[in-house]
Structures are given as structure tokens and as C-alpha cells.
Amino acid sequence: TTAKDRIYRFERYMREHGVPVSLENIECSQEEVYQRCKEAAELGKRVIISTCPVRLEDEEGEPAQTDGGHAMTVTGLTDDGRIEVSSWGEKYYISPEDTDYAAPEKNRAGNAYIRLQSVWFKEEDEKETY
Image (cartoon, rainbow, N blue to C red; front, side, top):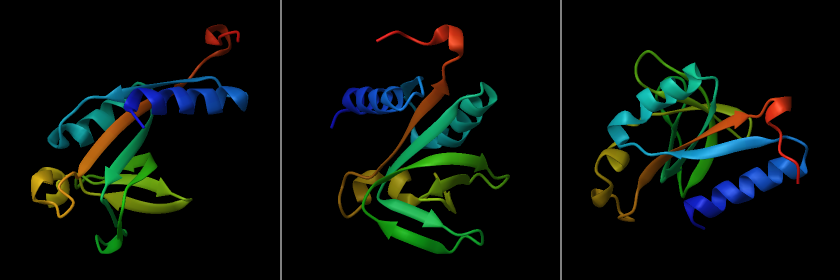
């Protein structure tokens, strides 16, 4: 699916469940991921982070999952530059400096990425009529 299609599907799903939201892609380089998550949080937005491959760490920095691609909710930021995420209700961490994201051309699959989308929940006066 395209980025635009994913936005459409997410917004439609949430609207059908009575939760009007707006979603937008955050264009940034791998080096900007942490800062862009911080900026979105300061604006009161939630962030969805998508990675391929998935490189999740536990609290001690040990590998917890290294598999395909996955989208997760950003739940916090650490002082050491890691991004706290929720994956199926479990707490993990992502290091944007991971070599797969820093040099995606060197990844075995050759198409590694780390992407962000911001989500904000609309207020009553912003809700659209469908």
C-alpha cells in the first residue's frame, strides 16, 4: 500500500469506530527521527513508527525481536536517544541509530526503513460530518 492509502484506511477505520482523527506522514531522515517524535509529542500528537526490519530492544538494550516490518505506537523517549514503543501491548525500544536504519543499502533486504506518522484526535468542533 502507499503512504496515502494507509492514511485513508487508518482515518476511515477510526471514523467508523467513532474516533475522528487526522493522520499525516512526517518526512525526516533517520538522524531526525528522535527529534521529530519529540516535536510531535510537544504538540500533543501521537506518533506511529514503522520499521523494516523490526529491531526491538528490551530495557537493557538486548535484542527482543528482529523480524520483518511492523508499525507501533511511540509511548516515550529515553535520555539515551532510544524511542519507547508499544508493540501488541508490550514495551520495547528502538534505536534510530541502528545500522539497518542508518545504512539501509547495507541491509540484507536492501530496503530497510524507519518512518513516522503523526496522529491527532479531533475536538468536538473539528469533527467532520460524513
